[in-house]
Image 1 (tube, rainbow, N blue to C red):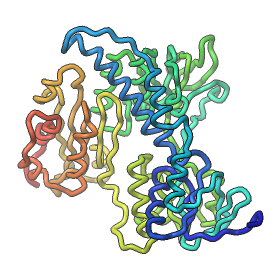
Image 2 (image 1 turned 180 degrees about the horizontal axis):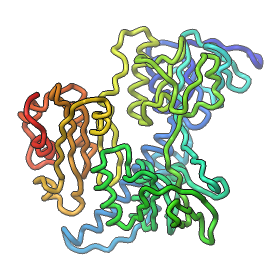
Image 3 (image 1 turned 90 degrees about the vertical axis):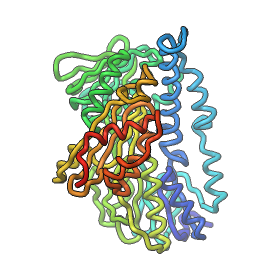
Image 4 (image 1 turned 60 degrees about the vertical axis):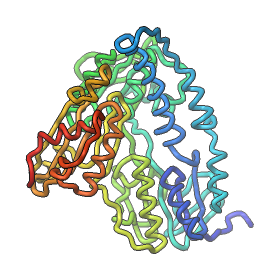
Amino acid sequence: MTQHETQHTDVVVIGLGPGGETAAGRLLEAGLDVVGIERELVGGECPYWGCVPSKMIVRAAGTVSEAHRVDQLAGTATVRPDVAPVARRIRAEATDGWDDTVAVERFEKLGGRFVRGSARIEGPGRVRVGDQVFTAGRGVVLATGSRPVTPPIPGLDTVASWTNREAVAAEVVPPSLVVLGGGAIGLELAQAFARFGSSVTVIEAAEHVLPAEEPEVGDLLAEVLRAEGVDLRLGRRAVWVSDGADGPVVDLDDGTRAEGTRLLVAVGRRPALDGLGLEHYDIDPPGRGVPVDEQLRAADGLWAIGDVTGVGAFTHLAVYQAEVAAADILGHQGTGADYAALARVTFTDPEVGSVGLSEEAARARGLDVATGVAPVAASSRGFIHGPGNAGLVKLVADRATGALVGATAAGPVGGEVLSMLTLAVHAGIPVDDLRRMHYAYPTFHRGVLDALAGLPAGR
């Protein structure tokens, strides 16, 4: 093959994170010829820097917290936090030292043609990577994920800072850490590092942490974090960042400042779309992502899945969308993507699981809603659990249909309790049917029954 020779294929998948891998796998199983392009690591953000290593850190920090509860529950214990074991585990078990050889081999064993590099669309169905050009007979799947947002704070570009990537790769806990952003990523890492002994300050412009969640959850989590020694600066904006004697200094709009030996920037993520050549499909996407239809079509012969769609930056969503897009490419009849019961979990302690609409979002859509809230500590399992039982269950029901449109389960294993609520929202199960169910005693999920007591019966 000569340099610049055009190579023909059925589908080009740009980005081999969880969504891209899934879509490519389904198409390869169906016998199509697939070229997969990845400029970083096959597997994407989730296994190397996101979901997997961060939750390993959360798990490790959780054992430290539980050990501190021994004196209240089971005797005496002396705890000496050390991040080294989980740092080694991340390298050896999760990331192979940030080497994707195994993942590349897995893709190629399926029959895929792998190309390492940055892709650029040169025309409909035509993609260039360096000197190689590919034409896709059936189309292109865009799955390039997202990148951390760098906020336009004066001075931020002059100091050394972390994103989630540097944080999960850390082998030493910094003596002090300033976190910009009180969302899921910022709070998970803030709490974990605090439990490993770092003095942590979190700066969040909203009045609540986890501002996308129910305000009751933000209040609950703030109380827990403050009790653990985390300094929360809520309703405050960073206006200047500079280097101090020991590390970054962040000046806030109320005249106060926060100082740390490290600065973690976790104010959100945005779709990675720069330089892809989407103008060749007459697409000029807004900052939130590429508009797609229910089959994930962005244009004729172009599908977009995962973070780039702007629907949500969740691995499970990218995989779900990949299945829908692959089915459409293969010509299978499908019902299309449905996000009414989109679930998410923040792995703080308490763990926060949510599905569907919040109360505020439901009212914004014009729904006449009723809510029921029950504290986990007041449930039988919460009482048995004792220390570490902070949490709540909140249900949002549509009075017109008598069914749940949203729910939140915060507390120990809140993400697992969420499973039954996700099913309820997805299937539109009437609240009265939920009341008639059997809830095993004593379980955390029985707290859902307590929350149901706050909802009106029938329609």
